[in-house]
Length: 367
Picture (cartoon, rainbow, N blue to C red):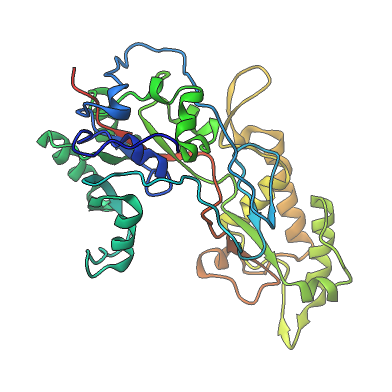
């Protein structure tokens, strides 16, 4: 970033340059409406009863790192089969120049130790160039705490906003958070390179009546992938992975036909769980839960021909003996010695994802 950060004494709530960090919790944060300068200064209170044309931010794909498999589909994260050997700095200056930034965010685990007992937190403050001061809220008390915080009139600089909840949705409608549409529209977002990496679909999905009230939290298109025992693939007579669904069925049928390996019983797929159902849906390009058909009608995925093809494919897998006999029960109990298992895709600092489930929002500047 080439811009010079003004001291936080002149930016008490806007945290314009804090946006450059993006990876720190921009997953679901909102800028308070009372910011007098910076990003929120260019923002305004919006009348949500009026729908305007959405001005989308320019998308810039994150740099590809050596060893990554990069998709041509926008928003699809790169996949790395080996640990990343060298990272890069997306910004060269610290987001803050002293002072502190306050946040309101969900705590999914045990509360962390505070500075100075938490070395990571202390290092984070050093990298930020200021004090990170969060309000950490247990997920089961989010609505109550959000309502209390808004009612107090003391809105943190950055807030995790679950806009599907009534409390958060009302707060957006009441102008608690800043309308960042003009601030982030088009090439204006390029001064914050990490935010420019957010996929176009995420901005579209999180916008409210054509307006942007925060940075969307992107969910990956693919959240898991199948991991296969290569020794069983070779034992079944294959030396390469299949390129289509028919080839996968053939290979898994052969693996199931082995019956045992290394003195243990084996099956092709251990459990008929949601993740494997997703894999088969991807094979048949079922698509998103809700989608538009050729005539522009909104349909659920179960109404599509692709979904019917996916169900038939599952049936073929069962008939071929690929699934464990107790696959339905194992879906909740956990798999036993499978040849093909599920592995969550590890996130890396260099990956990006799409879809939305939360937002980062800023308080609205005063009128």
